[in-house]
Amino acid sequence: MSRYTTVPRPTERAAIASAGEPSLPPIPVLFSRLVVAQAIGDRHGRNLFAHAIARQGGERGE
Image 1 (cartoon, rainbow, N blue to C red):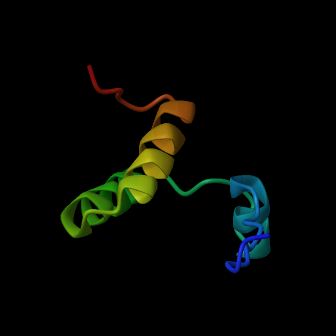
Image 2: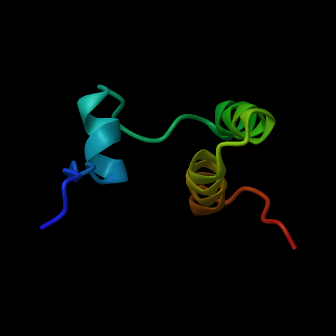
């Protein structure tokens, strides 16, 4: 048994729903958040925002 306790993370949809947002923010907002995640070195945040942009039909990296 590990001495570290794991905390279950909510899914992305559950997190958005609990924040009171009915859907994902517009693409320009997602891009600005992606830039911030890149600037602070948040790899998980970059992944989430890049995938959210792609889901909404935004640009995809090559």
